[in-house]
Length: 482
Figure 1 (cartoon, rainbow, N blue to C red):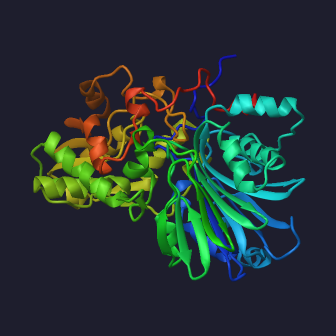
Figure 2: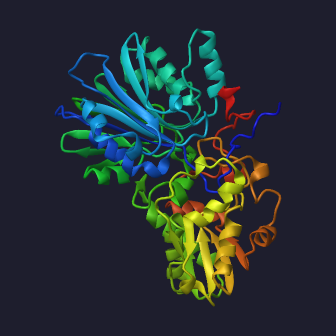
Figure 3: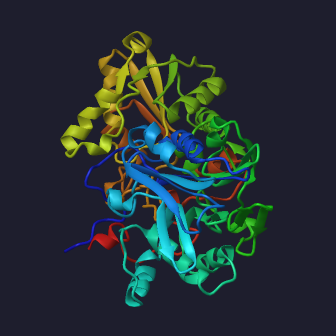
């Protein structure tokens, strides 16, 4: 039987998805952190809507006692006030998940909690390992029994195994990092320490903040702002940060030269919240720039520029600023639609576009419209949105895309599907334009990507096929369900 493509899904969703959001907190004054972690996860909800969880511990309590709770659904669906009240502890980690490896089940929800000879470990992971199958096999042959089908458990096992041989947990994390390959931002709770680790390429974001006498390690700065916490700095690619009663310790022995780093460009184009800053670069600013570049490189005469909510809006604003064409609102988004992945059939999924978005007829009727979206993956949504604008009376519809065409899959935790499912695979821009029914179509040029992020080094693998590390030879998605 043929293996499914690397990111082939049963339910086909046009929009890209990101794997997860992580949040860790240690209150050095001994105050409970569960409620703060809840609000932090709430701010990271855009990074994953399938499942969530929190694990907390008391640093002065019995060593090894961890209280955890996780479930399927949104943060405010899984946790009640009573549940949070029960979670006593001054140190803890939390997680929101969208699965790119491992099925969407409660067993695969995080954080993962391990009890082992040195105590306990709770781990939350964002990213995708490309050598997880062989590491998992190696562990299984030495007697490991797995409770989940996610690569995060492979990371947790390796840290626990290394901890038996090392003087402290941060050394165990470093040793594990020498074995695992791929994308990961980790937040780890041991009985007396909170640890953050970022892969040497820096694929996924991770930052450090502080509120009063509590330290936070989390995926995005927007979660710090939600809690009224002060941003301290980003965790460097390859860095391991350890927070104890004595403050912050750092190990940079796994860091690569800057030119080898490879941040995921889609954090800036689509995934991250616009009010976040990643590695010193404003996400909102990057999207404004993308729109400006589109106006410079793919100009067209029109009456109004509109964005497809939400991530297309800032790029549309940038296009309007640069071109002088008025910015407007053409779409009303239903904020309460929630998680489309529960719809089982493609036919049902496609009709959900109209449930999510309605067109403001008065804004577009009789006008030449420039519509800006962050990406075209399969094209199944773009053609419907173009048609909706035409049905509402738009005279012309010109589509501009604030990323280059997708031509290759992603192996590092972004849900880019197999090549055969990508509309740009083996098709010209003109052929794509005809398929989606637009009057013209323009993509962001590849050489503009580094300009978006002020010259930071980025991964462009899904556009060029040139990955920062050797991709796996075999399909890795769904590997453990075999």
